[in-house]
Length: 502
Image 1: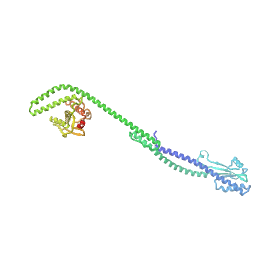
Image 2 (image 1 turned 90 degrees about the horizontal axis):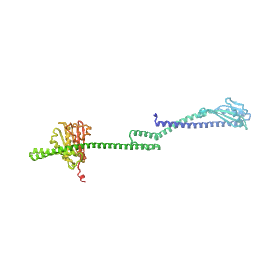
Image 3 (image 1 turned 180 degrees about the horizontal axis):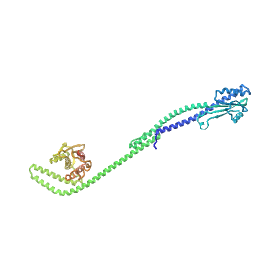
């Protein structure tokens, strides 16, 4: 069940009840003691006055006039006292003077006459009211033996009111009530402040910190101060949050490790699939090499013969270019056989900018960009790279052809840029063609995957480019947006002659 009051209010109420109850009990006890003392003083004072009557009367009269003198003296002093009633009795217990409002107890009267000593009887409230100071006033009766020359001549029976004591106690009670509430307010205020500082405030800090921890903020800590128990609680809380932080760190590390493992497994799976596809390509290329190799070799022989017989520069240039392209076909056939194995011819060191210009010149002479706006931003020299020059030319040719094919004739634009970033040679080929979706970007380098129409692409160009760049410890990245174009970034490590010789 939810409480409707807080800890501070509960402590304040409990402390107030406890303090007021304690002070009230102590005040009642002290007032009762004070009342008893006042009653006793009142009785002693009255007895002191009454005891003087026999001695004064004995000095002023004889035995026969003794009771008359006592009666006269008592009447003189009774006006100043809280006398309610009196009765003067002789030795035979006959009423000498006074009123019938007071009646003597015969047994007490006989004891007083026989012993010659005074007696006092107090009449106050009965039951639980007797525990309350000054609750009902009351009265007391005095039995005073009247002794003349050693013998008891009579008894003076008096009744005095205690209302004066009750009035004094009422005033004292009012003062005590004021003191109780004043002193209680001081005690409650100081106690509330002390408890608030040592208990309530730390508990509230603990509640706030617990709420923050529940919200996922585990870097919360509490100050270790205050009483020993509160300090130990703060130490335990800080230890708990530290343990939670350690557990979260371990969990995050485990999750990160699982992500890395999953990524490695995915990469291994992709490599396995790629290896299987490369094996298929190798088997296909092995079968094609025999069928293509013989006619290709014969064609190269015929071209060499024609070159020796031709003397016209224009025709000779065409024959030279044709021979070069057939030689490129021959190298491509051999490259298909090398896909499943490391590149054994990647030991050439050449200027990367020259390879890029060779690829551009080759395509420009064939009129590939006749209907495309081609912008070339290549410096004279970039940096030396290590690998196979004809493979780099083929990679750039494939990328340029893909850029050309994605553009619309008469509206297309292809930008070729080259620069060196630290120890990396970068080629950027950007077009404003149709682009493709992110889902296709994930498969763009897979073998036999193409976005071209059937018969216009085999899906090996970008696969070949990606494979070659990976063998050179480079990167081939693609960024494409549908309707905005595609950007291929080719990054190759620059050749460091000093590091190579070292």
